[in-house]
Amino acid sequence: MKKETIKIVGMHCNGCVKSVTNALNKVDGVASVEVSLTNEQAVVNYDEAKTTVKQLQSAVVEAGYEVIENVW
Image 1 (cartoon, rainbow, N blue to C red):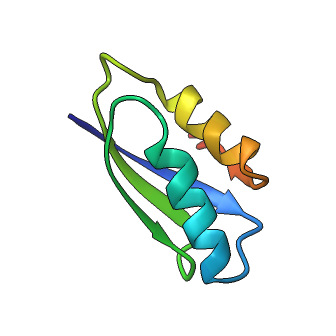
Image 2: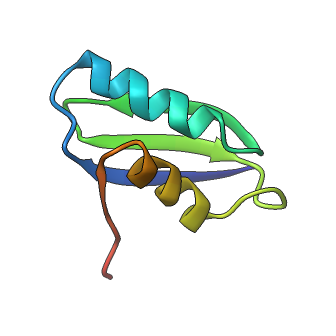
């Protein structure tokens, strides 16, 4: 299992948190998701043999939110 933190822009309420959580949970290989409205992020534990960070980010974008990619 691998752990990834995804920074998310555009979440404003608990409904947004639920939407992002549901979108990420639908990705094959995701074991757990913890979305924080306060920290504007999702922490995802996933099987890297079944999915990639790009697929996780795409699920967030398809749910209607913006992802900030790490630039360091």
